[in-house]
Length: 79
Image (cartoon, rainbow, N blue to C red):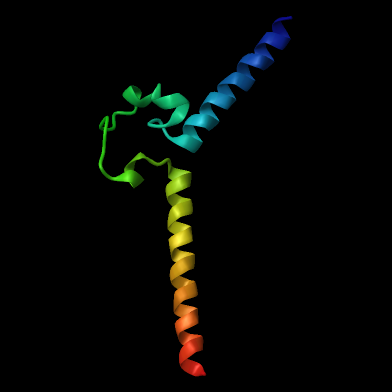
C-alpha cells in the first residue's frame, strides 16, 4: 500500500510541476501559485504573463511569419 501511495504522490508532484512549467505561475491552477512567483500581480503586457514555452512558441511563430513574408516578397519580385 505504501508503494502505491508513493507512486501516486510522485505522479501528483510531476503533474503539478508540469502544469506550472507549461502555464507559468500566473496561470497554473487559476493563479494559485501566483503569489509565490515574485512577479507583479498584474501586468499590462500580455507576454509577461505567458510561460516560457508559450513565449518561445509565439516567438517561433512570428519568426516563421516573417520568413514566409520575406520569401513571398522575393518570389513576387522574381516573376
